[in-house]
Image (cartoon, rainbow, N blue to C red; front, side, top):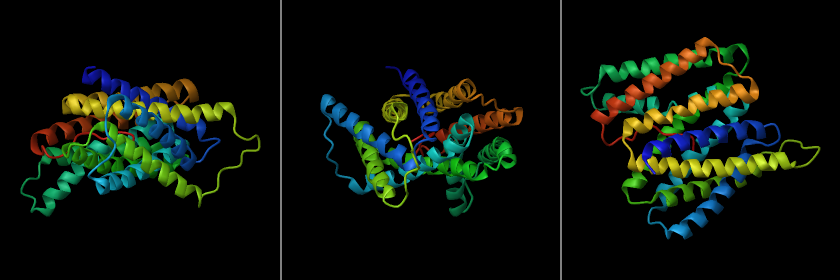
Length: 299
């Protein structure tokens, strides 16, 4: 399948996952959602690896551990942000990863003496954070700032995790193996968290609807990850980054249809600034830093 269709499919599935997470958050904690999402991922990827003849043994266990730690932290923060923010806002903040990548690049240039600083990249980063301020503006009035900061942190950690994904890919690890070990890390992390974080009260027990939502989170997230990883392996950087942002549109439509979440004009302007800054940063990085990956997305 061509990379653009893979990327659009991944963006849609990640948006559907976000919708299911938000619906399930009224009954389940982020760690419970992570546990089921990861268990489903492990089961699906075991079957997919067997079907495609991909061996799951690895020579790079510690690289997978580090990717798992960062990726699981990003995912938990994003789940928490989805529960407390409009769906499109949470998705937009998570999509900040391209701008975080540009900030990492600028930081590296400063440490090396500032000789390779590109003023266009500095402007892109500044515009991106102006967009963040506009997107977060409604959260100040609604006492949602902690969730907003969690969403922002999830995007930063997602950018760091994608650096590790890129390193694993260059080391020869197939996409199925990378996603499998990430899902396995999610199972371990959720299991440990369950020992210290009590489950929310459920007087009526587990409902079929709630369990169905958890299953949908796992299936949609796993399929989206596989599609996204394949798209980045086959497609062009800027084209993938552009289509990746369609997840914001999908999330805005789903939030409006299901929760009647209509973003105000300031939030819409902020989303446009973030998308524009992210695409600009991706284009500049593709010319100036071939060793850095493009946009990360929704663990």
